Length: 137
Image (cartoon, rainbow, N blue to C red; front, side, top):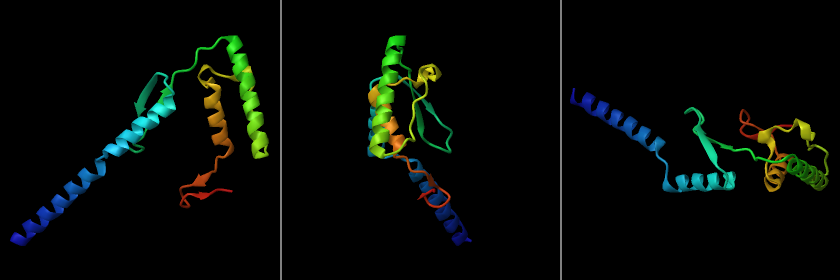
């Protein structure tokens, strides 16, 4: 009878300790998240929304730029040049820029940020979680 209580106590203790260690974040992980947030926001005001517990990540929404029509035209020209450069560098025509009248207010970003996004898209490799992260053809 005493063995039954000992085994039950050990089992419950193991479950409690396993649950506690699964939710802990190290100080390095917290610091890395904060640095990542600073890089993404580029000094702009942000609103952070937490996702449901299934994802356990945070979404950063950057406030859109308030540009005049002349600035929008200038940015659009820069976007087109950036896409031409990246397509030439990658040897493809996969990237293109929408016409200026199709841009929404949240689509406008600094040209440097646009270059980073475009370069990421040009080298994007699709993978499948079902097959262990292998590239999808």
